[in-house]
Amino acid sequence: PKERLMALKQSVKFKAQNIHCENCARTIKNALKEDFGEIEVDVASGVVSLSLDPRDEAKFKEEMDDLGFSVAEKLACEN
Image (tube, rainbow, N blue to C red; front, side, top):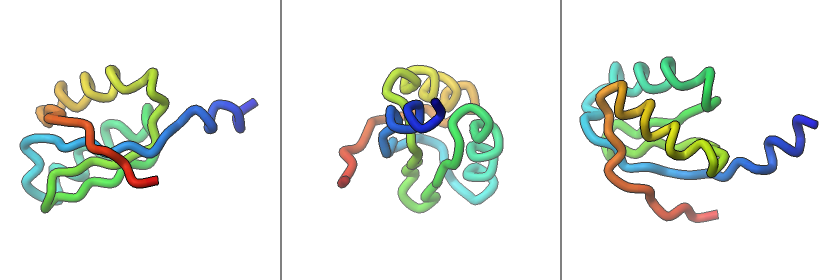
């Protein structure tokens, strides 16, 4: 069931490099939305937030890297 799949996702935040403007944010959101769903990008801090299945973390980082926005670190999330 879809509900069970959603339960595996956790809210995570990553500090990424090379995010300089709204176009950068839009590029990330549009390119990754299909695979990872809704993504928030804070241009000022370079922080990318999303709900992610922990098993997809490596894939997410690889996709970000392919776009030219390498993930510098995973940030602790306040749940």
